[in-house]
Length: 215
Image (cartoon, rainbow, N blue to C red):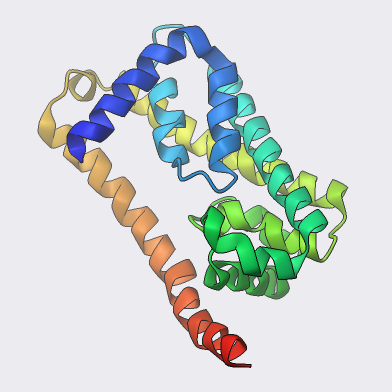
């Protein structure tokens, strides 16, 4: 698995030279739909090239934020046009199981439009929040504003981390213990956020999902 990820990262870094900001935006748009591409593997590698003058922090942040908004808008309009019954019935075939749809709905109901903003900072919910927003026909302008602000903030944080990593000569030279510290810290933080804010909620949703199937 590590070799596969390393190979993909090498391909991505090489393609960045020709793809530029457009590639960053495209991948972030995909990340904000149902395509399982972690933004943590898109933004930091590009930001590591800032020191070399290939990109700028502002350019990466804007490209990533705009790409995220495009992907999130696709999810919004797909859900708005398809409706809840079709999403629940066929969503599992496009990596959107019912439990996650219900989770996103509960998130939207609990936090309202501001939940769209906070969802951009969390795994799983990040690319699903457009579904309930589209189903309830949330005002698209308001949805876009919260999505764009949250996406730009998240992209900016990842960009800053990538720039700092790029400035770390030991890290760039591949000293294993430094790489491990960065990776471990990131996974611990994201893992904790996922467990407490997403995973436990999914477990609460599953009994309700089974109840709906029985009915």
